[in-house]
Image (cartoon, rainbow, N blue to C red; front, side, top):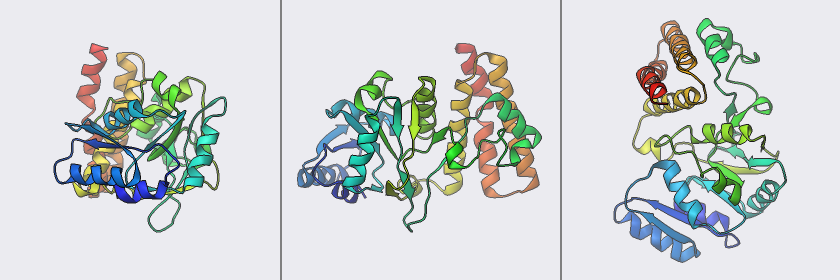
Length: 279
């Protein structure tokens, strides 16, 4: 996958391949890929997590625009150049391409931030209406954040905010990044017609089941949402409301997926309180 990703980009870009603590023979094979396509090879002796690996690559980059890309992505060079051009415009924080899955179906994802009011709406069932402003799910043109297997930013902007948020080992870093850029008054752009192909969870699915991935994603998204709240009471109320709404949905429609989501949400209850006290 890494070879396909690098090969798709051509030779017109500075490509940095981060070896995030892999064992042999993978490390040797990655070095061979970099030599073949004249990419920079950067290695960490330990797995720094998704954000840690991305930030290691950011420090090794030198161009005015940086692309934080998963390795299970293929992208046309002309598309990348157009995305980079948009990222340089004033007032734009990050540019996200339209995502196609391996079958060519549109899979661009995003949603609204989970606020206290939306968490309470989730608890009482109002968020079940997708069109409602109280729902975290919405049409893409109403989204406040976007999933980021391929995020295009000005390099100096990325450095100024400390790179990709690294509070979690993986998942929700794009959620946190979008929140941070929005708070700076910067725009998030998804230009129509500029597409890449992403094989979703191609790497993590080798290690975890889809239910386990859903559990981890829920935990990290809820933790990020709690971090954005001020005060112990607001943090606790958001967490309890979301967990209660998730529990109700699991009771109404039991499945391994709803159980996984509930398990992920439950993990935030105690840490949310403890973290708030430390803060």
